Figure 1 (tube, rainbow, N blue to C red):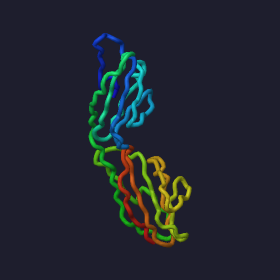
Figure 2: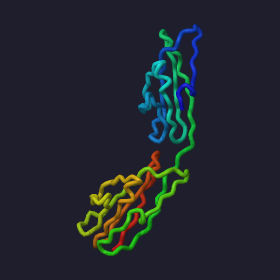
Figure 3: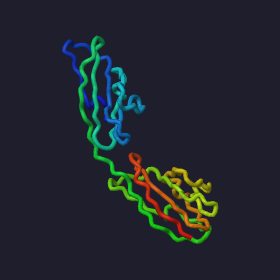
Figure 4: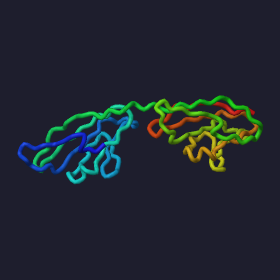
Length: 196
């Protein structure tokens, strides 16, 4: 949303507004944020914006309500801070479902066949994370684009990479985990096993 649509400023003396200060009191990482010239701004700090920059200043909404503030400067004095809110629907995180899978020793299993994901908001899945809790040399491993991935490490996988991701079974059972992000929030880790 353009900042200029969220607030206006007037001056009783007819002075020209030369600067603005913006503030975002909501530090939740899934909440929205101010953008100045395309750059995301940090919450909890005064953001200085010139009158010329106001046209390229926006607020990118996130999940839930944001507590925002603005004030203006006429070249002589700052006006008082004015509080307002931007309310967006609360984003619900994706939910992963997986069940234990039986495999033969050294079988290569497509990662996408091991779990499914749903998002109550209908959001597109932006990223996945895999985890393998079995460090045994006889156990299997995640593979992304043909490259074996280490155990006990969060493995980031994009939707495009998912088509080239698999789990290479070993000769002992593996304790595996997966979760998904809709670009706003990560869902809970879901544990499952590949049994051999």
